[in-house]
Image (cartoon, rainbow, N blue to C red; front, top):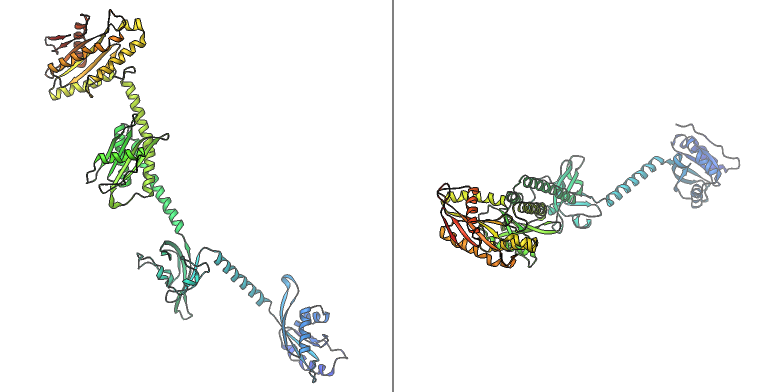
Length: 580
C-alpha cells in the first residue's frame, strides 16, 4: 500500500473539522487504494493519500470546473454528490469517478468534504472499445447484402438483420419458421443450417423467396447452447449467390456450346466434297442439338430455295413440302411460319454471307421436348454462321467447276467435260443393254459470217445454235461445243427410228440460222453426223466420234443441210442412212 501522506490543516481551520480529520487519517487514508482527499468548505486540502495528490492539487488550484462544481454542490446541498473528471491529456489521461461527501456542522452547514475516487480509465477504455466494436459490427451488418440471422429451438427466426431477407422485411420474418421458405422439391435429408447442432461453413442451399422465386444461398453458422450443453438454436449468415451461380451456369453453358460448335465446325471442315460436307453438317447439327431432324437449304442465283442435305432419324414421317414452305416463308418474310408441324417443334435459322441470305438450316424435334431455349438458338446461330461461309465456298467451287467444264460463249459442256460424262453414259448403256446415239453437228458456211459480218455476228450465231440445241434435247442429254463451230449431243435409250427423228429435227434447225448468214449465196446450214451405239459391240467415245465425224462429212460434201447415220461400228461394216 502506498505510504499515506497527510497535509496538516492550517491553524485557522475549525476545531470540528480538525477532529474529524484526525480520526480519519489513520483509517481511510491509510487503507483505501484509490485517491482520497479531505478538504474544508473553501476547498483547502486538509489531507490526502498518495493516490489523491493530483486531485488535491487540482482542487487547490481551483482550475477544474467539474471538480469545483461537485465540491460546491455537496457543501451547499449537504448531500453526497458523484461525478467524473479527467486528469492529464492524450494517452496519459486518467479517468476518475469521484464521490464527494460533506461532513461536520450541527447547524446544517458543512464544514468540509471528503472526496473518494476510483480510477476507471481501463473500464472506460474497454467500454469505449466495446461500444465502438458493436457500432462497427452493426454498421457492417446493416451495410452488408448478407442475411444475418438467429433461430430458436423450433427453427423460427428470432433475429434478422435490418435489411430483411427472402423478399420480406426483418419484422415479418421474426417468429416465422425457416422451413416455410424451403422449396417443395428440396431434399429432406440435406443439411438444414437453420437447425444446425454443429458448426457449418459455406454450405450451399436453395430457398424460395416470398414471391416463389428460387434463390441459392451460401450459409455459415454455429449452434447456440446453454452452459450445460442444451441446444437453443443456431446463429449464422447467408450470402445470396443466385446471380453468381446463374453467371457460372451461363458461362459453363457458353463454354460447352463453344466446344460443341467447335466440334461441329471441325467435323464439317474435314469434308472436301460439297454435298458430303452439307450432309455431315446436318448430321452433326442434329446430334449437337439432340434433334432427330435437320435440313439444310440453299438459295440459288435465281432466288429459288432448295433442300440440299438432310438428316432424318425420327420415327414419324414429315412432309418435305411442309418443311420447304416453312423455310421459304422464314426467308422471304411473307408471313410468320408455323412453329409446329405434325407434332414437331420447328426452328429455322438463315445462313448468310456478307449480310446476304444464301440458305437456311432447319431443325425439328418432338413437341414433348418443348420450345428451343436460348442455348439451342445460340448454338444454331453459330452453326448457321459457319454454314453461310461453307455454302458460299461451295457456290464458288461450283462456279469454278462450271467454268472449267463449260464453254464460256455458249454455256454448253466443253470437250473434256463432255468426254467425262459420255464415258459414264457408255458404261450405263452397256450395263443396261440399251442403245444410244452420238450426234455430231457442224455449221456450214460459218467462215463467211466471221469474214463478212465480224466475229460478233459469228458469236451470236453460235449462241443461237446452242439455245436451239437445248430446246430440242431432253434435260439430261449432254450437249457440248467441241470447238469452233462443232457441236455434239449424246442421246440415251435410242432406237434407229427415234434417232432418225432426232437427226432430222436437228438438221432442220438451219432455217432458224439463215438470218445470221454472211453471204446470201452461202447461207448457214447444218451438217449432222450420227454414230449409233450398240451395247453388243461397245466402242470408246473417240471411236464413235470418228464415225460420227465421217458421217457428218458425207452430208457436208453435198453442201446442204441434212444428216447421215452410221449404224455399225467396232470393226463391222459401216452402214449408213441419209436424210436431208
